[in-house]
Amino acid sequence: MSEAKTPSTKAPHKHAAFFRQSGWLMIANVGSGVLFYAVHLLSKKISVAEYGAFGVMLAVAMCVPTMPLQMVFAQQAARALATGRERALAGMIRLAWLGTLVLALLLVGGMTIWHAQILNAWKLPSETGLWIALAVVIFTFLQPMFVGLMQGQQNFFWMGWSQIINSVGRLGVAAALVLLLAGGSTHMILGVCLGLAAAVVIGIWQTRGLWNIPAERFDVRALLVQIGPLLLGFGAVQFLFSADTMYVKAYFSSDDSGFYVSAGTLSRALLWLVLPLSQVMFPKIVHSTAKSEKSNLLGMVMIGTAVLAAGGALGLTVLGPFAVRFAFNESYVRVATSVLPWYAWAMVPLSMANVLVNNLLARSDFRIVPVLVLLAVAYGVALTYFHTTLIMVLQTLGVFNFLLFLACAAFTWLGGRTTRPATVN
Image (tube, rainbow, N blue to C red; front, top):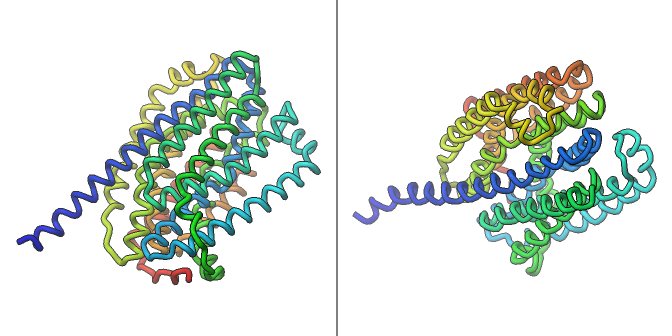
């Protein structure tokens, strides 16, 4: 009798844990997202051009492949913990630290040589802001490493708190400097930098059990076979998520880019609701795949993502003018609300495609990766031709996000399975 009951009690138990963990991350995402969003309320205290400069500095940080970096470390941590390869993981983490240090030195050297050209191209008002933005980029490389390790550990409690503390630091510093010292984009980006620094410190401390142990040699070639497709696949998805702001900044005026950033801020808030579902799903599928166990999380996550994303887009479509008027100056309302529905609904297929990408890559089914890269390249090329209006930019984004969803759906439900890559030794 007891043996017959065991299988039936495992699934509800796992589902309860999944909803508890994703619920906490959802609270953390929404809470930190509201605080991130509140930073943009400071746009009422600065000029549209200054806000546009802040937006482009944020967009530069968004172009750092945070998603692929986080998922690489999440996958490696989850796999190592499932297969007892913690010491090989420690060696990989230390190698990643060294690589980040080399990259930071290269970025500092490049900034020293080309800072004048960058200031002119991005229409930034302050060289100090540019250097702070460089520090943001470096911390943005470090943060996903430690967030990914916490995700792979399934340490969702501190993963959520690191997001909240990051957002509190960002808002607190930026608000104090703008409201008390009449600061601008430079002071706002300083808040971003200090918030990220706090999140990195938390991640270092919480993952010390993974990197502060004796390391052992590992097969670098086998590691690259595993992480290469993850970097390319998630990097392509992130490009589809973030590149539009950089193109708008290049092709439109400072005021138009400021209006566009405001609509993007509201629309990307949809992902605060849906990303926790796939974040919790990913290491669980990696773990079950490494142990050849079955997992039925995908359908549940897809339904939740579709309902939340579509409901959020509908809400922004109906309440867009009120939301823009509340968050930004009156001058933003006409342009921002005209593009907001396009932006919000373009996020819906991207949100659903993100779930499918997480599922495929967690199972080491990398056949989708060349298609993702091809779509990202085609999207980048398309934006160089289809940018007559802000709405045209968003229509292009929507088309490519829908193509991304169709491609992921085809590989998920129509394609056969492939064998998993070898474990790193």
